[in-house]
Image (cartoon, rainbow, N blue to C red; front, side, top):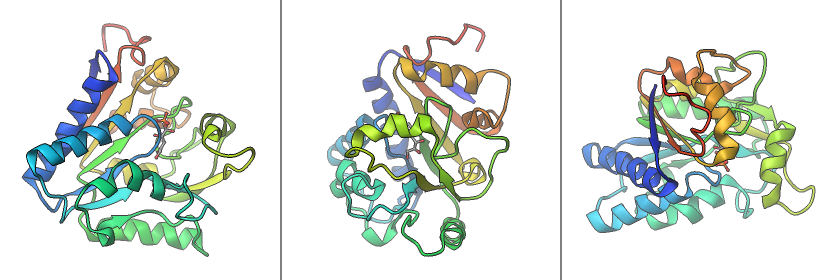
Length: 244
Ligand code: F6R
């Protein structure tokens, strides 16, 4: 796991956006995995800027998102489908048919998860998967627990995640479950980039990079990934000692 500590989130956004743009330039049919949440917004703005300035085409790119709420209409303003279109996809020349989300309104959630994994496999796997990190160390919606769940699955969100995300919803309207890629799906990506900014992520970053790999901090599994890069600002890196 390669750790980059940068001065601020603008520098992180620029570095991470450049990695995505370089991948699209190198392979115009690449498969990209995206995350939602507050953290990647600046990175998405930078991707749009580079896309416009460098005239790079996303026309043959395929995308998969990490997760989606259950029982929230796809076009609800808080769905991850809406978020990604508003923050990134509407500004690129992606084809809608190449944009994939887990369907949190599927009749059979287990089948939907299998279908999503099969789709990822059919296109040859994800070239770069972007991740944020929850304050409790979650990645995607893989919440802390007794085991690492390998496959895509339905998850009941923890109170910590509900507290962090409920600000986006009208009172008590936040879904309490979601579909998420599993740890195995994330670990299968050829490259993983995790971004963490702000002091509220400092504890999670400390736990994910300490020697202990445990499902109690799901992000710690990335220590086993052959090509994982972690980008932190100084606030998120506050508890890291010099030896890391
Ligand atoms: C979102 C996701 C989550 C977020 C995490 C951090 O698709 O998978 O794991 O990355 O909850 O969210 P923010 O960036 O809002 O702090």
